[in-house]
Image 1 (cartoon, rainbow, N blue to C red):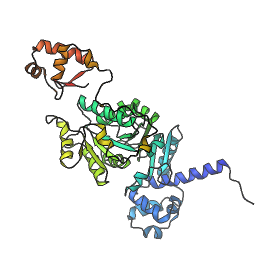
Image 2 (image 1 turned 90 degrees about the vertical axis):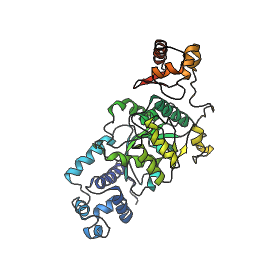
Image 3 (image 1 turned 180 degrees about the vertical axis):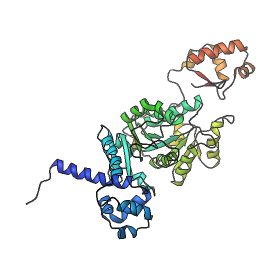
Image 4 (image 1 turned 90 degrees about the horizontal axis):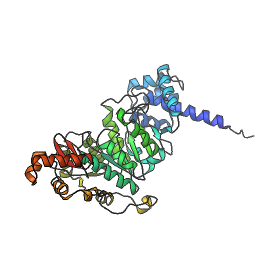
Length: 392
């Protein structure tokens, strides 16, 4: 006679299985690579936790890891690990909070290609976004106003044609890329370097919530993990691995964005870079990438023609017209009088100070300052470090 299992019994089995995954994940010294090796050897976390010291010794892993595993006493985690597991499980019980293992159907296939693929992903939002075609967008935390707007425009356009934008939720270009993608249709994914019980930087609380409603925030770090500097480079490998390519918008020569680009190159992914002014230090990282073979990008079409995305992939998303992504639908420039338009042309390509604008135009300093104030209030120009930039 067959026994019919109840829903509560199935739930209990699932909880036990997840606890075993979390037990291994929290075991001291057991990194992702060793975790995957043990999983390949024994088949499941349960089997690993039931393995004898002799069986564990047959795998090339450190002695301290074997000792730590042996202390778990079969399938009963230690008190310290139990507390960490309880934090994870309590977090996962909230709406739209998920803990996904590498054997879960929702786990993104592209991450499995990494030699140190995260055995567990923590996801806040909709895990289905992880299956979407993605483009990584990264850059400096201190962009120019023009750089921020470029990131938002590209992200919005690409999201509207079916590409989910993946970035790191950092200040600057990351945040602008997420904001732009949220105005499109394919949403955005934020990969962070800490536990999902916190938002870092704190000023992105609202942005993180919007991402969860139209995408997902993910991490390989357990609940309670603080945003330590050494965790960000590890985070970057996930951003590049999830994506078909990486677009660098603005980056200094020592920017962490170049780490993401290097990782993408090692993963045989496409690298794109937007050039900037030779006088802008935040463009030098992009220029270096272009010299090294990254594709110079002037429009979203430059990216789309190189991504392996078929029409079928993006067919479910309404496509915007092929207008230049830098054009402003409101065309606010046409509402300006001829003098303002003439001054604005002096800011078409390079930021400039008031003194430089006086030299390059027929206006005196008072006239220039007055017109700049009006255009700044209209959101047409911004001033950074005494230099004005046309952001429309």
